[in-house]
Image (cartoon, one colour):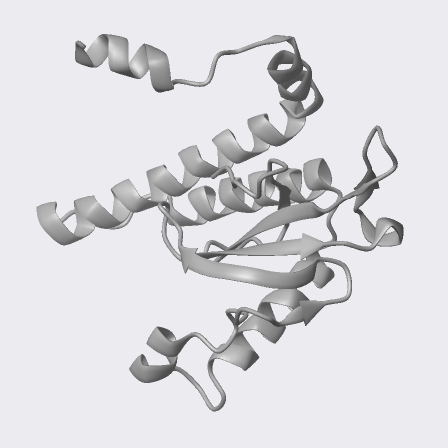
Amino acid sequence: MSYKDFVNLKLVTTDKDTCTRLCDCADALHAVIGLAGEVGELLDALKRHIYYGQEFADIEEEMGDIRFYYTACLRAFGLEDNHVIASNCEKLNKRYKKGFTTDESVTRADIPAVGDTHPERGRCTSVSPSPVGGFRSMWIQEDPAKGAFRGPNGQIVPRRTCVPHGDGSDHGETCGEEGEGRS
């Protein structure tokens, strides 16, 4: 099998549902692409300063653009800045008891352990390194009142959730029925 055939086999096919989700997320996509682009411009200014000896240029402008697209992300995801800050402080306070230490950055006290429970997510079933950095935890919610659903024969079908850690996000993503996550 050629590599091109391999990629075609493994690549997610865009279908009607994907297109619908894309349209539903158009504002979020615009905001995230804008944020990534502006962070890239700031990174380029830092590169030019470190490696080429150039003075920092337009840092305030780039920071303003980053703030603009960050605020657009908040709007697109229905978040409030003060809640994001509080959540980030809570995570970092769990991780670093008195301030940064290398040991605490490795042990990651903010990452759940298998068996931990969460009022909305249910029970943690696994924690593993994420392919994009950080960690990903898998949760199973077996309570229909909190997200599990009933199948065609009335059986309870648990909702499984993937939660990335270490990438600034703590928003769960619904997984397949077999608990396979997407990243």
